Length: 534
Image (cartoon, rainbow, N blue to C red; front, side):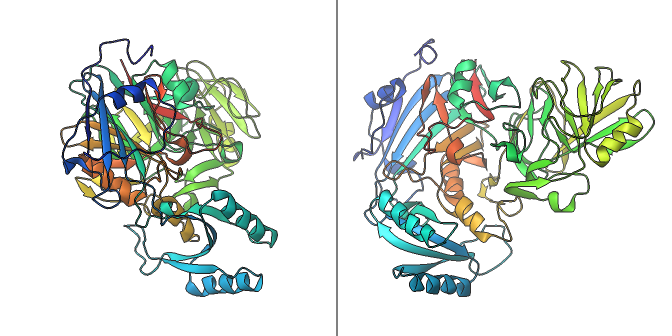
């Protein structure tokens, strides 16, 4: 272990219940070997609020550096009552569900049934059931459920999902695998910093690669991002990102973000918005729609500029705008996104040094490029002529107060907020995790159990970074939003936020990845990570 053991490691401590449960093993890594060697019995005071209180739980901990503690928690066991099945549909009304049921019976599928989903988001003003699930089959093997799904598909049914009932969000015994990093910033002499994949906005990289490149003590995946070209620039941060005093990506206005340090305090979670304006030397002012991304595609929405349907956050959805002004800096990469419109190159003094009649040119190492489409391109033609000056100013508002960027400031997008001032406060509707036209989206994203990456702040200022493995029956079933909030509260957080999860959920300790990837392809390339570095 070139990283983890290069400096003296403080004593290892671990806690577990007297009756230890053994879960399905993965190949033992040096970190896991160290954890397994040291095991001591302790009382039940530290149990996680997952499943029933009497579940067996094992905790093992290791000090990675002064002020940095890593803990692995294995809890629960596979339930004999859980099974694989096929969700045929999630509909809003019982009448719609009964129509589906009738059609299934006509097509020869007679063992389907309806499940009423009563849970809504905590801040959802609507009352009554969220919707109704039409489900068919009960299988011990995933392959058998997949075979039923194929039969349904052949009959013309769409939107089918093979699911495991242990991930439903209802009562289960698990199991769960939870990894916890706790950082005492008063004792830790290193830094907690976000790091872009490949050191730039454009492109992706696995957390293991990012951690290795930066020689990190430990790390977790960070914010939401664009995965494929149809949604924008792959690797673009789908929300705010700031590092070393530089605003790299605009906010999804009104969505929560993790602020690792500011001039006022060490760490904070706040609802953030950004306002960016370009002012020409002729007095004309134009709002800058975004930073370092492809014009016209706004991942997770929450944009600016009077686009009414786009100003509200909408998770995992890409809003479109034909008229946008985008600023590119060297952190984006070597070239801007190509396409119709125009660009102007602004030097370090704010003077327009070059005009381009199409997009897709070089980005200077100092200064920036302003790219315009539609009406924004016309604005550049009128107000950004050769030799004129363009001043771009950014303002960040967090919980109603202006936030000042300095060299120590880091901001990472996430959402929804989970804890506020010690209380569970999940604002999923406000932050765009509920689709009015498709209640099933919130059910799948917030009520069902998924892999999660979470960040929290304890009352004493310590930072918590937590991963919960998921989508792995027999290993770990994941957590829903409410369970995630309860886990963070039980670990001592008073404020907490959900970061990007699912296939992105990853934690590294030294050279080891300590999480199990949920994507079939293995560890997912991501846009940014949060690293502990010396």
